[in-house]
Every structure is written in C-alpha cells, then in structure tokens.
Image 1: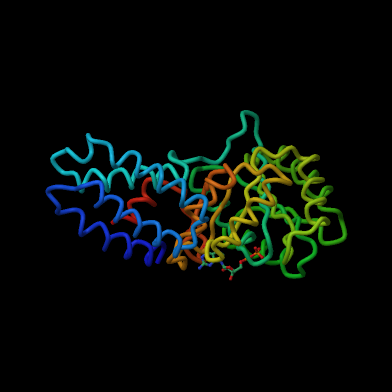
Image 2: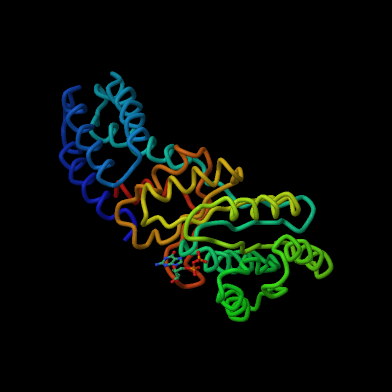
Length: 296
Ligand code: GDP
C-alpha cells in the first residue's frame, strides 16, 4: 500500500508525542531525528530531507506551539502542513486550453506505465464529459501501437495511428487536424519511451513539442524506483520543460521517496497518481490527502 512503511514509522514516533501534556525543545529535536531517519529510509532526497527538517523545527520550536494546550498535536500539525507543502500544497489540475483541443504529450521511459497511463487519462477525461483522442506516436516498441488500440477499443475512445513508417511529428500533426475536424477536445499523444534517456529520444520529443505546441507535457515515472524516478524527472525537465508528473505504481510503493521529492527537486507538480493496473486506477494527486495518508 502507498506510503505504508513510512506511515508506520512516523505514526509510531508521533503516538509517543501525541499524549504529552508538556513538550520541550529537546522532545522536538529528538522526534525530528527520528523523522529524518524515517524520510531517508523512505528514499527521500537528502537535500529535501534537510530543508524539510529545518523548516519543521523552526516552526515547531516556536513558543506558541510548545506553550499551547496541546503541544504534541500542534507539532504533528506542523509536520502535516510541511509534508503537504513538500508535495506541492494545492492540487494541480490538468490544463484546459481556451481553444480546443488541449494537446497533452505523454513522455517517459519504457516500462514506467506511459501507455497504460495515457489510456487511464482518456478514461478520466471521458468521465468529465470530455472527448479525448489517443495518438500512437510510439512507433519503435513493436506492441505499443496495438496496446493503445486495444485500450481505445476497451474505453470506446478513438485512436489515431499511421502505423510505424510515418514520423511521430507527422503523426502528431495529422492527429491534431483530425481532432479539430472531429471535435475532440483533448489530444493525448503517447510518445516513444526507451530504456535510458538518450539524445535521440530527447530530440524526437523536442521535435514533436516544437510542432504541436502542447499545453501539457506530462512525464510518467514509476514511483517504486524512488530516487531514480526523481533523477529521470530532473533530466526530462531540463531538456523538455515539463508541465507536470504522473507517478505510477504508487499502489506498490510503501516508501514514498519519489512522491515526497519530485516537486521539491524539479519544481514541477505531481498531477496524477497511478494506483493499480486497471483503467480506473488513476487519481488526481491531492498533496493534503497524501500527507494525511502518511500521518494517519
Ligand atoms: P510503458 O512502456 O511506459 O508504456 O509501460 P506500460 O504502460 O506498458 O506499463 C508497464 C506495466 O506497468 C504494465 O504491466 C502496467 O499494467 C503496469 N502499470 C502501469 N501503471 C501502473 C500502476 O499505477 N500500478 C500498477 N500496479 N501497475 C501499473
């Protein structure tokens, strides 16, 4: 379950604090040592941990907290607030262009869950009475086009494909023309993934971006890979200027290191979280709810 091991550790620490009638500066320092270890064990970026601990201490050691009637609760509230801020504060919604269609480029490394997430996003938009068009631009992985077509059939969402002999830039361009003609209000472009970040992949993505001027570039990363996911996000962001991140496989990520580091490291919000393999297992990412999940 998402955040389970981190949640268990922090909750054990906070249970001891919760009932205390009087909390001293030493208590806070002691507790923050444990929080620090728990976050590092959860694979949160060490710089992020350092800044987080400093911020919480600064606020928690304030006299209005320690002298309050429920100091333990107040300290926990500070941690809750700062965890929420760490994950972006407010929920960050998917863009909606003033003039349809809204063009969304889905990018990511192979295996992260990009094609699945593209399908899930189509379903999410459908539920909001939108009319998405899926676009098969991953022409290198043999099964990718078929995979998208199968998802499209299952969801009853149209899929635009020109096979694997036409350039992705051309496919994307023609797809947008079709979307305009057919009144699709979202165009979801499933781009190619590779096992590693390389120049060829980035050049192709830059070409597509330059041609279609997307309203969103969403990077799909696997939450279970922890700091690797954060590093991938940093590289993609430097090269492509992302608009947001989708964290997949959060259902299997008991630690939560990527979820807690991505926004702080890249400055880009997590917009959605994948919570399973099924098409309806995509949730808008709510930082506050995620923080509550961690603190119980
Ligand atoms: P791509 O290469 O990035 O397009 O990856 P795929 O979309 O083919 O997904 C790779 C695998 O991850 C598939 O088996 C998916 O079912 C699985 N997957 C994708 N998202 C999630 C998720 O949120 N949770 C879980 N448990 N599995 C997922």
